[in-house]
Amino acid sequence: MNARTAWTRLAASATTAVTAAALVVGSAAVTTTAAAADYPGPGVVTGDTGVHDPDVVRKPDGTYLVAGTGEGVRLKTSTDRTRWTEVGAAFPGGTPWADPYTGGGTHLWAPEIHHANGQYYLWYSASSFGVNRSAIFLATSPTGDPGTWTHRGKVVESSTSDDFNAIDPALVVDGDGRWWLSFGSFWSGIKMIRLDPGSGLRSGSAFHALAERGGGAIEAPTIHRRGDHYYLYVSFDACCQGADSTYRVMVGRSTSVTGPYVDRAGVPMTQGGGTQVLAGHGSIHGPGHQTVFSDVDADVLMYHYYADSGASFLGINLLGYDDAGWPYVY
Image 1 (cartoon, rainbow, N blue to C red):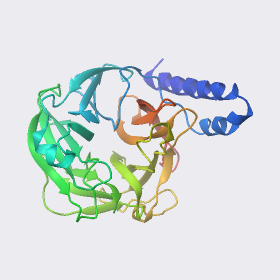
Image 2 (cartoon, rainbow, N blue to C red):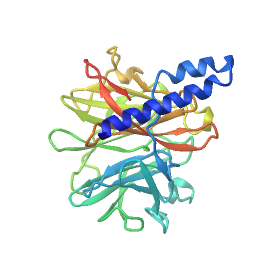
Image 3 (cartoon, rainbow, N blue to C red):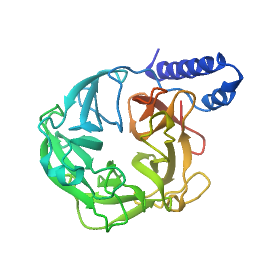
Image 4 (cartoon, rainbow, N blue to C red):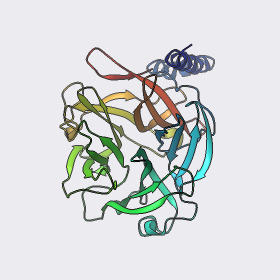
């Protein structure tokens, strides 16, 4: 059985399990069962699967390294994209340079991890809930292992006088090898800046506006290049409320990395547009803060979701594309 077939069967099995569980509780579960049929369940993952805001890199040796929100940025590894092992914090000694944005706490948000130039790059957010006094910092490491990360500086920040929020960084490398960082949460939405492809720090002062919802809930951008298009994935609605979370994954696309991005109906994402790719179903609540990457078997959608208990877990599905080139999960 190849990896694509295995993951398709695992997703189908998970969906069947959710539907069967709903049926046993009687007519009150009819709505939940119908919703569950709209999307497959996450593919099976095992081991240390508790995570929030995951991002992933496939290392040169074929293993996977996931970074997620937590004390000092949490790191997990896997040899097969299925079984995961918690290996520790990127910054076990703390990040005093980030203290002005976190109130002295060491809980860092929404990392982005990348391998290039013989080293690992890690962009991460320092902020507090509900405010836009925030910053995105960069560190590098020769191995990606806990405790090996060197602080390289601040990439971009926002203050209470700004109309954007400098959190949720995500890197994309365009077809000409140029590096771009998208980021943003609420306020005036998703922004983009240029990065130097050697240092990983900011290059120039230009800002590009990619998506917004008139101050509403939009965050967690990630851009995936496929063929002639760049696909901008974002999360709409409420994160971080346990089983009450309403996060959902939306997408638009453009032939230019800086936009304009439009959804399937042609609505610009700067005007609230977005085509839904994944939403809550059955016992999968608030799937979001997604990343997309190309692997040996398919494009892969990785995200967190909340269980009925309110705990957050790693979700992984494969992505297919319809005849018009729009993605769907399986």
